[in-house]
Length: 93
Image (cartoon, rainbow, N blue to C red):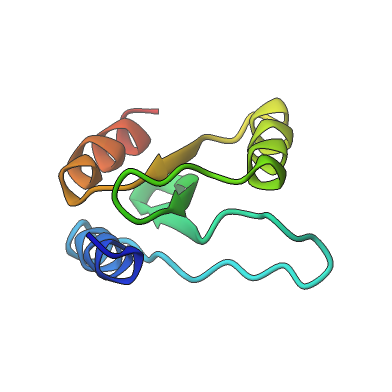
């Protein structure tokens, strides 16, 4: 499955849950996750979207570790079936 398709499904699912998933662009800091998921109640997480079976690059993993070290949740999404699980986890935190 292509990354663009999975990303579109994520955005639709977040919207259906009452939140937003803006594209996260950080001009001075390469390797940041693709989407910022913001849900009701102040719940948030970063999501790196990949095509099916693809893994984050080393720089992306480094950024994920930095964000996690700051206390943020970071998810890697590479298939549509993971979307519900990820949203449930974000809402449960």
